[in-house]
Amino acid sequence: MIGRISGVAATALLLTGMVACGNRHTGTLTPHLEQRFASEGTTRRADDLDFRYTTAPGGRNSRWEIRRASIVVTKSSVFIHKNDKIGLDITPATQRDVSVDRSADRIRIHAGRGQSEEIWSFVPPSDAPGWTTDIRSITNLSKGSRQN
Image: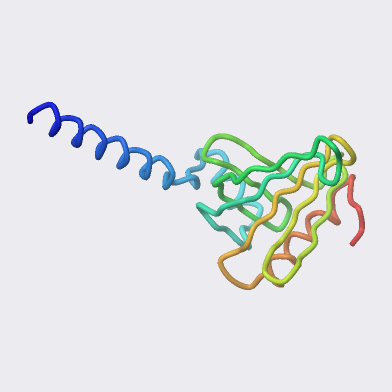
């Protein structure tokens, strides 16, 4: 009987841990990054979103996965991150081809070309047209801009 109770308790603890891991906060930034974004003028920020991350879209080696991350949009950058881990950082100095498009409420940020292309696709918490306009203003500033 005690063994069965211990097994049930262990299973409950494991399930609780799995749920907690899936709901971890992703928006923590270093003081340096917080200062950077404050000086750039943050226009939009959303934490803990589900991004569909796709590599080599449309190709034979295309792959995708859901990644929980956060996004900060300033007057001069788009920054997707999971706490200290950088997923995408677009600035006026970005050399990669970058663009943004929207379909209904889903926004797709494209970076790179061909086999090296990646897409970060997400649904913002509100105002998808406004988010798209703000992100597009940054992608159009970058050296690798694909005008859209």
